[in-house]
Image (cartoon, rainbow, N blue to C red):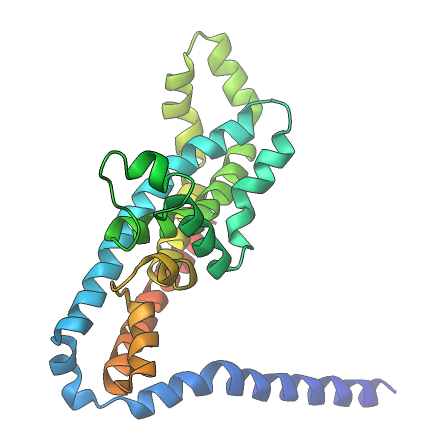
Length: 261
């Protein structure tokens, strides 16, 4: 019976392995098979391709910095403060992680659009235009990626031994000194990990951005538009660049986590 059980387990594992290869490896092979590497550098200099690359990298970098500043503060509040409906606030702070991206983009339209909640009564009055600009893309990315930093940072904060904070407070350290000398250094692993994943999510963000970007094209939006428009060579190159960037970020993340253990 043991041998029969082993045979069934091995059969199952081989099926899983083959299915994994088909699902995860074959699509990358299919992309590489379609790329004309002799024209790769030429295609990368095409204005739409180059513009989408620069826009994605720039907006993702700015959005990650903003999300880090927001996420640190919110994570600190959720970890160390006590207030009514804290659980509700905690849930709302991570809701964008599970919210469909198109729904997130629609919420931003309802907020910053011409007839949105802040559009006509506030932004239009001061002559500020957000929708269909680079600012809109950054806001969409911040909305989507901040929960990654909040979740990772809050967990790191909660892992700190509270006796360290109590001892420092007893010795007369002010909250800023405790934050700078104890909380941030001891939680740096979680903060950096969340920031890396947030940047990766920002640079690949599509659903929310496409709702507010207008004619602007980040790399994911450019892939969609170029595929629909028949510019497959350009779409292939941009997809490859995104894969290389994403792989590099994940490699750095895993290497960083591995060295910190």
